[in-house]
Length: 470
Image: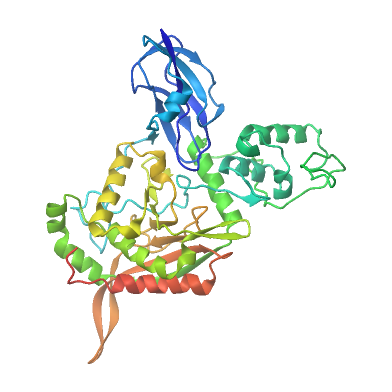
């Protein structure tokens, strides 16, 4: 008999730990290869961890709701193999695939490009606007070269812990990183009165240490009161407790507004050329390429071109540093039937032609529908597109998907009478019009840059070549 170590798998490039939600197998139960053993949660997605071997679940090393670092042994499976499989052997092998979990399959979306719905598009735009973007949120803040996970940062904000105070909490994580356990222990000690003042750096010490002089509040980070007192509800009401993901959504959105000073610019685009071209080629496109042609890849193709002219739209902020991203990875904000949100990412979107973009959009949509999105599918986004027009909205003011600095919302395409300038004079014509709105982080994107980017993007939409193939 041999014992096989089941380790917490790698869940994405920026994810260092996960929370055990539920053990689907009990001690002594038989486990098959690739059968789900437990469910876990990160700040991005809920996932399932499959078994790496067949046997009997002999040990469970972590309880439900415990936070476990990546690569840690979480259970052991007794097999009939001749030799034990060690953690090192598992790490040397290929990464374990983790299946992202959503509550329900994603329903097909359709898009109104005029006053009537285009019924032959079973999945038109997978990017309806919902002002919550947790699935691709990777919020980090830097001070004294320290980085903090979204979970730690949210706890700090909710408890009124300023950045100066946070920087001086001794971390037990990798490279001294502050973990959830560290900050919760500090919060408990603070509430018990064991620390009368936030942590400070000792003046004569080589390393930060703790001092406890008189109490003095620190407000380097804005405070968000997460547990306000409510008066009892009266009348004919229904009280619904937020689920775990909805609570995360709420915190992420508040955090984004606190981190980034939001500015939103608006423009409108005559997308008649796009509508007419798509109507002409969509049947042949689907027949030849095997995927439906929606507006989303067309929008993304234009966005990537304009981003190259305005690189500050494609960056992030770490402390006082601006990190310009050379890769253009476009996230598609996608609402699930449960009301929650996930943001699949098309990596290196500027390297793909319209066929490649269409296949990427459709494959990510299908993966979302069948609960097959992997954590890496929602990582590394540098710019987000969200469609406020899917449900008929003309425009919206989206919230930035941290740590990005800009998000584009496209509205419903509507036929309107417009003044058309011709060489023979002005005329009135029926055109397909759409409003665009861009929310951006005013710390690094000035109004002139944000407005210019949006204006250039509207022109790119309007100048779509109606004679092109694809």
